[in-house]
Length: 155
Image 1: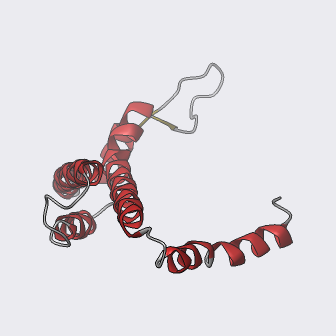
Image 2: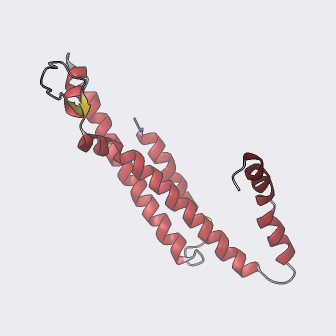
Image 3: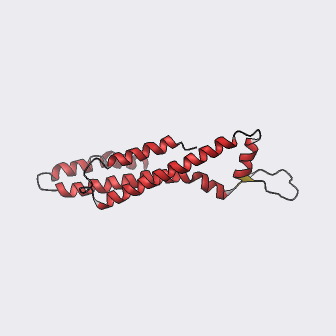
């Protein structure tokens, strides 16, 4: 289960990223993606905390495991098979996965915002004297990736 501290760590990284540059210098796409990522991370904190409190309260009962199985799944009734394996309740699966997926989408939005900020910064410094440095910085990581993909036969 996702802990609130993991979500809080992502939210603090995103909010700290706003201090890298003044807000007026950050591209509007980056700021929008980072605000969206922050909102998703905070929502993930709320949902993960609610789920943790729910499971903590449910664990106080003597039959807590059977109650959890009853909430998360259902017993299908087949003719001729009185004791069938429990089937997951798909609605509950989506509900319990929501904090994790919100946190994943938050990280993706944050990374896309960083990429937009880097591309915007590269556009500004693309003058004739910096062109060689920028090209070497962009193409250097692709050489090992190309050789690895060629060895694995991905081309």
